[in-house]
Length: 278
Image (cartoon, rainbow, N blue to C red; front, side, top):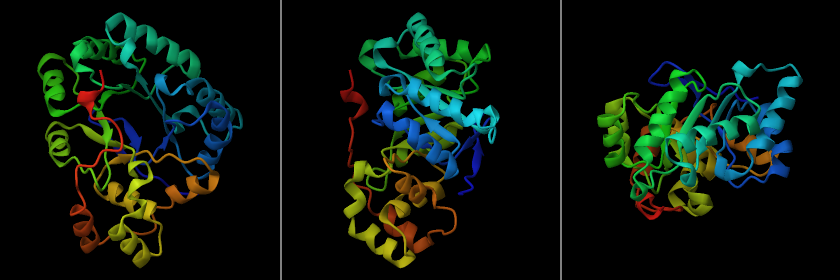
């Protein structure tokens, strides 16, 4: 079983650096994949209202807890409010719905899924997250897919500094400017689509590094993100891939490897740019 390290968020809450991403994981698959992830050492599970699998995740984690090997304190669960539920009151209602589905009393991390800046609601939405945080219903709050301009408004007009910003990030989209802003303000960087939805698995440089370490390309890309102090969520559809994605802590990349990967940044997005999400 992999021993996954944790890091401290800006409020002292510990978060496992490697999590299991549940985007596009159908509910019927969650029942098998979540216990497999727990067996592989995962304790961090990332879902969202939009994913449609909060109920399945809640049931799967409930089964894990009933077995008695883990307690609720061993698990870290993230969810997100979807775009059409933004606004103060709507966000509070959406949070309640997510908690019922997940079967939890307290959520570990709650995020705004996208800024959808054209709607002008993300500040009110974040105010709702602050309310939930102050009431102790969530241990940490943050955002997802926010750019520097959106973060600046949060910092200027709200009181709680986001604990994290979860964005698309991988060797072909390294988000250096955004990560520098995060570091300056104590915001942790989380990565979704850490393998560019599989596109970078054919990258020859990553392939060469993988061959040298006797590892898969996916393991090299994920190991790079861990060494860059990024919290990462690889998706997997089989127990074998779950185990492979967690086998990242018995090797490391050297400076030559890191320099070669740094040169791969090409601004490639496998998903939407935040400005395109309305």
